Image (cartoon, rainbow, N blue to C red; front, side):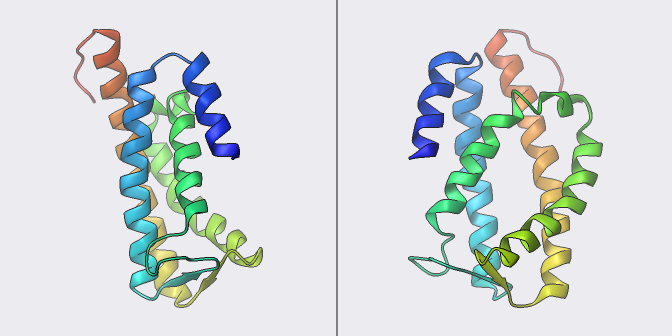
Length: 147
């Protein structure tokens, strides 16, 4: 319900609507594939996972909410994508570890999972930021090279 309310308010009041729609779709596609893959590969197991190995609904909600920050509160990272990749590579295992401590998931192969999380997030976040910049430029009617 929170995610639905957030989507409603966000798309009612914030600019860059087309960019944000695309970001939500891209984040769901990329994020759910990644999170489902880690489950399918036996690296982690989610609690409340309805259809194995597909990531549970709350993971989808996290990716939706996260995607909507990229073009707004985290837009300062658009010019610092390398830094975003490094921070993501370090912070993602910590975040998933916190989730495991809260009982949301279980780490089945911690050594491999830490590496996979760091590399995946270290690449995905700069990619999503690059898409943000590209789509924002398209939406504003200015065509700039994405550097």
